[in-house]
Image 1 (cartoon, rainbow, N blue to C red):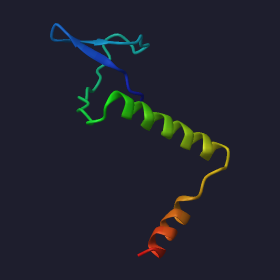
Image 2 (image 1 turned 30 degrees about the vertical axis):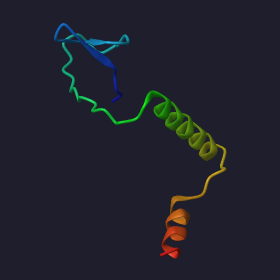
Image 3 (image 1 turned 90 degrees about the vertical axis):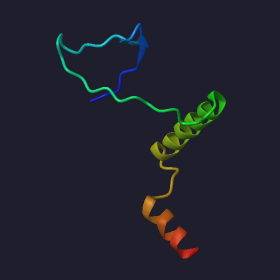
Length: 75
């Protein structure tokens, strides 16, 4: 399953991208609420996520269990 982006036009949903879903396929629609981020904040967040994923892929990241252990040690 993957997310598709759409906009409301004249009361109808219009996909912003082509899809290869079969004709008549039923899909679930979830309305995305405003997250309160400005465009620049969202851009910065996405950049940081991309950098973190690249760090993890290159092995330059700490394990989740180590991070949790370090946090618990600070309590």
